[in-house]
Amino acid sequence: MTRFLGAHTISNGGIHMAVKRAGNAGMTAMQLFTAPPQYYGDKISIRAERVERFRNALAETSIRPENVVVHAAYVLSVATLEDDKWVRAAGGLAKELERSSALGAGSVCFHSGSAGKGDRSEAAKRIARAIVQAVKAVDSDTRVLIENTAGAGATMGKTAEEIGEILSHIPKSLRARTGYGLDTCHLYASGHDITVSKEMFTKIVDGFEEHAGEPPAFFHLNDSEGALRSNKDRHVLIGEGAIGEKPFRWLMQDNRSNGVPLILETPQKNYDIGDDDPSADPYDVRMMALLLS
Image 1 (tube, one colour):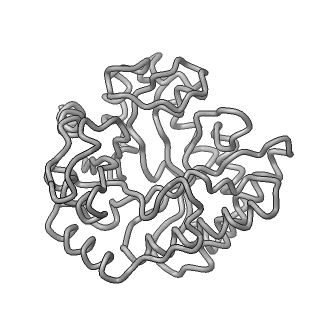
Image 2 (tube, one colour):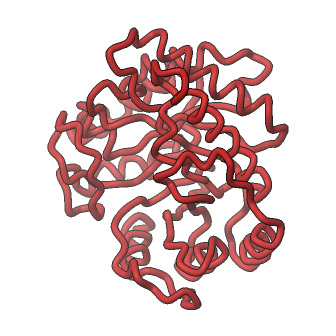
């Protein structure tokens, strides 16, 4: 089995420095933002020199471009009922795909947002429409992947059924450019008890694969500060939360963790690292060693 392990590394000094920090941690995958995640980013393009620095840094590591995941902005709620917000969010998703494609990243993952008080099946169609719009606008090999949610409020993508429903609205001709991924903290917080047993863990992932018609295209590896069904999206270091170490061992033994990016989104020890310091974060090094054991 081939495991591509990485983390969402700190980008102080630029995204090429995030690559160097990932490389120095011995990572074979990584995640990053291409623009500030608290804004739509629908008008932000990526400069050629930034792309060149990123690609040059990546070439010096063991990270292949297809194992780079770009996390889209948090505000891209393409499930929304509000037309003006949908237009900006959908535009932001398409622009993210444009930036990520320029970098040569394998995929963009995103949170599809809240359906509000509207019909959830209609929200699934709105999400799919935004994905289709982005993929049609940007011709590349970069995939657009839905991330499951921790389930707060009326957020979409909490269940296998919802993710399957969203993907069912993607035309077959575009389906290969889309997919989904699973976050362990979000699974647990939304009520999927992945801690019960290896058999239950497998059954839960089986459910997502069955409804989506394919296995997850990435995993986010996070322990949960919140309890089961808390709907809290609070990530902590593996072994320091309510999930514990065992489910991550089961995941590493599951064939579906083979050949896809496995990304830590756990806390960093040194958020204020100097712009020119390429050192690996000590917490990332610790978490990598734990997973590889």
